[in-house]
Length: 235
Image (cartoon, rainbow, N blue to C red):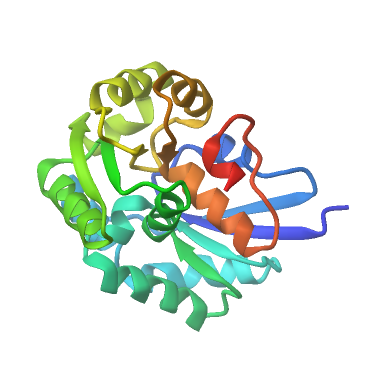
């Protein structure tokens, strides 16, 4: 019988349920709930709407009713777009409606990059330029140097169609000799199967949004994520 349950609030357009479940070890149940729809006219408008703490109230309450030990808001841009103060406000909002432990993807990414010893980071993302600039500001504010940023520059509705080999190609393009790690932003990108091979090829950690979220979420619940050959998970 499953004795531990953790929860994820995902954005309304999230399509990577099957992938994130791969990081969950046997004996742990993952509950996923979604936000209400948000305006998707452009990247910045959508993630700004999803950065409102109020959008988490209902899905967090639903997750709490299932008995989860911890809840993560699995949306990278939604949790960095308005800076570190809003990221903290999102966590506080989840706790205020009952989350036993709360975290966000962008907060988890900062912790994950620190855990692998990264000070200088190459970045891959699918964002529009205004959102990409805010990602740079957020990471710099957390103390990281950005060696290179490589973007897909996709429309919001194109992200679910990205394939793992496309992510692999962009990670290779983004990596620089002076980067301690490569970070792949956006929970909409498929990354589970590319992490270990890229780490072996590049000789450095590759931290991704969904990986960092599940790593931090399961740690908060007192257990460990599953992912053979992924350096972060040994931290």
